[in-house]
Image (cartoon, rainbow, N blue to C red; front, side):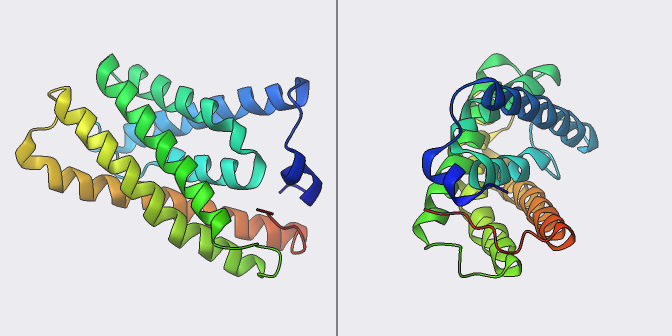
Length: 193
């Protein structure tokens, strides 16, 4: 987790930032492929969408300027799995918008410095999941409908499944953040507004 100085100034654009950008892309792309592979059948809606959690954790705790890497990873994993370009672009826009808006909303909810790591993970897993998943699902399922993958009669069912899949991914990653901080003693690190 970043120090206060890193969050205030951001990572300078340079080799370190580009390395994190590329590393995050490949990790998130692999998580997307894994999530779509676990889905019972491909209709564009994964049962558990792990990139939702990795995106929110990356944008909140590492650097919000990683959002293009989030978008590219979601686009690449959906294209790899056979989604058409129209649906893949819409899904990437939805996933990135959800994580970015949720990051801003989490920062508006107040400073994190006074919270214990348990409450930081709880805040990320609840507020983050609700905001990010709802936005991502609305845009993503609309994209699948417009691409002819999901019929309008299944819109609500797929939206609910999408929200659940994103929420589970976010809860899993917020749990990993909690465990990481507890094991390696990062209790005093905080995310600043």
